[in-house]
Length: 417
Ligand code: EPZ
Image 1 (tube, rainbow, N blue to C red):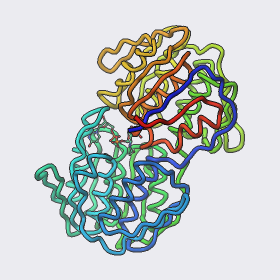
Image 2 (cartoon, helix red, strand yellow):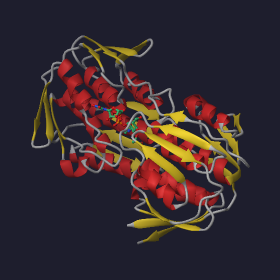
Image 3 (cartoon, protein in one colour):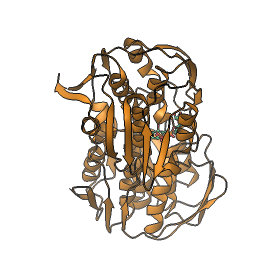
Image 4 (cartoon, protein in one colour):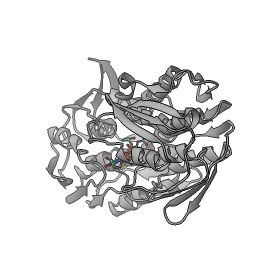
């Protein structure tokens, strides 16, 4: 396993380029299963999770070629519509092949993903949605087995907002017979990037305000060519990094319209951010003001930025309360930040953070993707040396994060342990 060693206290400066969004490219790759024509995806980030999705597609019998940042995918023939447990357990997003496989083949066998560090992560709403489209769905030996000669359009309301649940059911419905209306759908920009792709393929999808979709089933879909949107969570991660430990950082490719809740919260903390054509510039803050935050579905404050925000509140001038409304166990980074001297009390889904003057470097352990980023940021701001172990979590969702930080002047090394 690899670890990152960080010598904190360096003021970073320079510019970074935001990579393609992990949570957009994964569903878009799954959408290629809906057609036997070639699909071309540009701006693909080189992530562990993308490599896992490539492996899954190849197991399904799909031809995949990946050159530089372009993926060419052709699902000419599905060898076997089976997503095996030993692959799905390494990446929950594998569940995104369920809807497209069922729509394409009329049959899909996908392992239940199992829980992870941030929560139990059920997929009951995915299953309810497929059943609403007249699929038969059973759970056998840890696998979801879905069957449907041709799904039938229906009206279905999600009990809770679910990002991949919305994506799965939209992909299941685009070739169903007749009209589907989905209510209480997720509004994340990544969902819209997928819908843009599906419409390029010939799907008939329209938004019905405020949070519904109307889909008219078509007989078949064509291929597509698409450039993946920039990763707003990576951009938010660099904004917080810049606020905590930089002179000034230019974040190229960041779209401010995807970051409204994050930007308004950072303004509340006294962080100076200016926007340029296709870039955001963040100034290092001498003083960070505390501000409470609650995570919510888009356009609310993203749960995927909560851990990074907690690192920033650890050195704010006062106390803040962080409420995590999406996942039941997404505070594992708090104990690791405490090892660096942070003063954080966790009570159910609330964390009370009393800002300290400065953090001290320490050996810490990453537990999930965004917690890893939070620990790296804290280590950069801390006095002294830190070692962050199990950084394979980081590599799942950040392309060359340590390399980008090094280009900003960070003293950061990757070691084998
Ligand atoms: C997506 O996960 C993202 N992953 C997550 O990003 C992100 O944190 C999450 O959405 C919330 O924004 C991808 O897009 C690949 P949900 P997803 O279904 O779809 C409950 C990262 O760091 N729920 O929107 O799995 C669920 O337990 C990752 O990049 C059900 O109860 O999340 C949670 O409490 C982490 N039943 C809430 O809904 C279901 O059937 C939201 O989960 C589905 C979800």
